[in-house]
Structure formats: C-alpha cells, structure tokens
Amino acid sequence: MRILVFRPQAAAERTAARLSLLGHEAVLTPATRIVPVDTPRPEGPFAAIVVGSANSFVIAADDMIRAVPVIAVGERTAEVARARGFTDVESADGDRIAMAALARRRFPAGGRALVLQGRDHKADTMALLADAGLTPVSWIVYAAAAVEALTSEAEEALHREQIDAVLHYSRRSAEVALSLVDRAHLGRPFFAARQVCLSPDVAEPLRRAGAQQIVVAVAPREEALLAAL
Image (cartoon, helix red, strand yellow):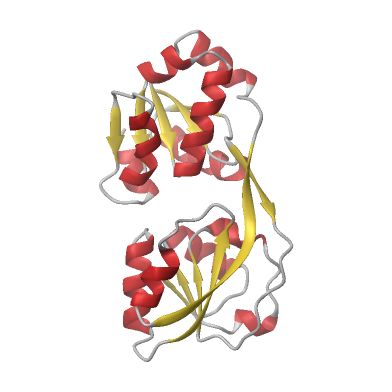
C-alpha cells in the first residue's frame, strides 16, 4: 500500500522505515513542526516527572531533573528519556489514563509532579494525575506549530489518487491535516483513503469532517496502529 504519514519529519522517517519493512511505501507530509517554548521551569522539588510525549525532550535537562523519577506515556517516550540521561524511567501503556494509573502505583504517598506538556495538550491530564494522588505542576515546553501546506509529493499522490491509507498519530495533527487537504482542494481523494488513527480521540475530527473509512488501533501504540493497516 501507499500510505500518507502525517508526522513531524524525524518521527515520520522512523515510521517510513517500519512501513518499508512491512512492504508499504510511505509518503511523508508533516502536519506540524515541533518548536521549543521558552518558559521557565517551575520551582521544585518534585517527586516525579510526567511526560506525555517524546516531543517534550526539546528541553535541555540538567543533572537536577535527570535525577527525578520519570513516568513516560509509552515506551518510545521512555526510550527518549533514557537517551537524554534520565536514569529512573517507567513506561505506561500508551495513553494518559494508563500514565495516571502508573503514577498512582509508583507514588502511593503522592507528591509534586512536574508535568512536561505541549501547548496543545489534553485538558484532563492534570485532573487525572491529581486523582491519582499527585500534585501536578504544568511546564509547557514545546508547541506543535501547524505547517502551511502539504508536501509536493503528497499533493501529487492525492491528485493522482495513489494513496491507500492515511496514518494519524494525534488529534492536533489530524485537525491540521484536514485544513491542509481542504486548502489544497484534495478532500475527495483524501477521504477515499482509509483513515487509520491511534485512538478514538485522534479519530474524532475526521468523523466530524465526514470520513467514512476510519480504523482505530486497538491500543494507542504504533505497533497497533500499523497492525490496523
């Protein structure tokens, strides 16, 4: 299959390599680009650092915060945390609900948690962590800035009706993708392809836009997303 991948460039290239091993061809067209946000780090101390996306590691971590235990939303985020020098890292099962459940098990006595977030984040993350017994403190460290247009390769593939499926990894990128496709007047071939989504939340903008061929991964992990193809 020929598959359109809406991810920031570095992540999209990793996905393209995995698709190639599965016998598929990837067409890359980032919907967003990750940019750091220069906001001061809240004052500690912290019992934990909670990270909902590998994009959060645009920060420059110093020795003080690298010593704090990390709860990562999934294994990819955990891998990046370890690569950045964090030594005590545990991975949840891929979404913020699992992340909060892990926080409850790991920190039964509670404590303050530094929550690394993007500017466009899920509104209930802080409440979920508070319900788990932590005192969450938000630190906005990156933004997913919308790009202005599809890549020329993506435009041509859609124009020629050569896209079989589209991969969507976040609600934000799905929303931007819809805007880009509409701007390019390529809605018909876009919606003719199967829309494969990481979670029901990611799929929601596509449902509202009228997409009929939507497939949702059985778990919010890339392995499950690719298996849904």
